[in-house]
Amino acid sequence: MVRGLKALGLALCFGVIFSCAGVAPDVDGVHTKARRVVVNVNIDDKLNGSGRDNADWRLLHVVEESEVNITLTMAPGGTNQVRGKLTAYDVTINPVAERDILAGQTQYDLRFKAVAGGDYFIRIFAQSGASSYRLRVNLSAVDPCAACGPGENCVDGICVEQASTSCAQGCRSGKSCDERLSRCVWTNCVDVRCSRGQRCGKNGRCQTIRVACPRGQERVRGNCVPKCSTGETRVNGVCEPKKEIPTIKTRITGGQDQGDGWAEVILNRGRADGITRGMRGRHKATGKTVTITRTDQYVSFGKIKMAYRDVVKKGMTVTFRPSN
Image (cartoon, rainbow, N blue to C red; front, side, top):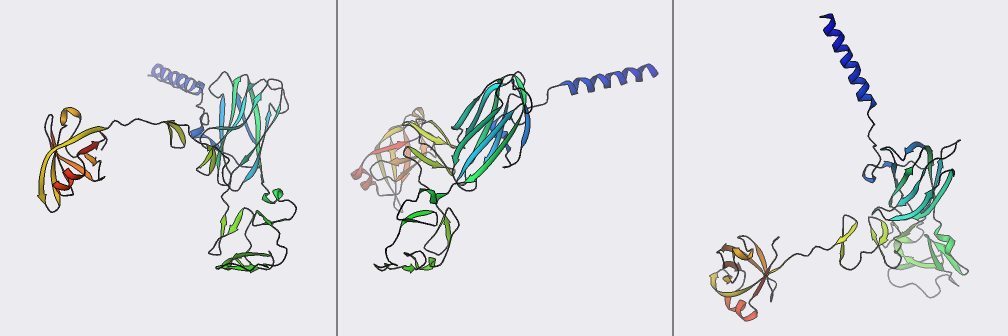
């Protein structure tokens, strides 16, 4: 009995040792598990280029248009042994800024402009070597008034031409003169002052200014990203090749009226061609729906909401997609 207990005790001890000796999973090694960044706070972590923890991802949410400043200190107080890369990505995982991490170099800075309401990912990657690091992210709001030139006033974050006299030309219907701004505004907006990055709408409420994306880009989930190339479509924020959906082209070979404005049509394609009961097609000439009611091996029958004589008069082609 004592010998059995000793054996059990040894087995438990070895079990604990082996389970604890395993490598802990890397919980932030992919962008889908990125940890959220708290700005203006030091984040301490470590990387190992030869182990499972060779990459860390962080998620940054930006409320208003800002300049993002990322500071990375490798091996604080020591010598950096890591070779790798520091990269910032937009929400579609397109890089917006990056820097190589070099062995022996400790300090790195990364800067980029972030749009209001945008999400960004930060990746610290070790190709080789191991080291601790300290990450810090600071945001500074972009000053829209900095772009104003001589003869312009900054109003609600927008550069507007200075009026020589107070609304001298009068205001059109729906607008009134705001004497303090020396310009015509929506009547409900007189004396309304919005925060930076906002403007007053027709209803008198402050609204976020939507800045147009640069040429060749489009807005996706609040971020400006490159437009998809010809032959691509955006799926879940990512450009992917368009999938060609095959079309089954059929011809009406006969039919008859069924009453209540419906007509039955006979088509020259059947089960052998991929036509199935319940499938819906499009009458090419009118755009009306043809629903398959029954099928044979090489012939099928459908119904359409129009008189049969009008079907014959307008056109005899009906097309189907297998997914319909």
